Length: 150
Image (spheres, rainbow, N blue to C red):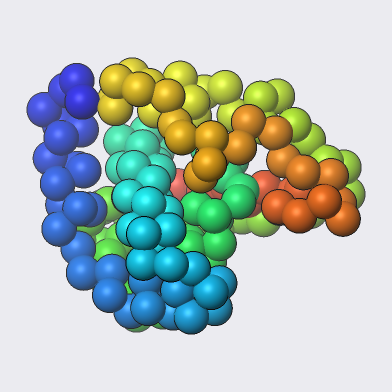
């Protein structure tokens, strides 16, 4: 990680208790403990990027999006997390377009910022470069976060 402000943001997020989220995610997605740990690590990174760059819309899909959806369902915990760790409420805004968009058309900024802060490329097992077409698995319509002051 490059700058100290970003390190502090990530440390706050990393120290948050995600027990409820990981327990529900593991049950709902029949994931192994190792898979849950890997997805949680990437969710934390994505949340840190969103917190550090509130003007950007980082599209997500796949496993990270699935775990974020689980987190959002714990509304009180999610609101508390946003207040304490991010500093603003990170809203969910699903893509309502019927078109499937390759990730690289709308996510180059996410991957670039990820590499800048974490000094490596995101793992393709968690962050596929392209979304699957409908019927092929995956999430063909990514969601993204938006900053909206309360």
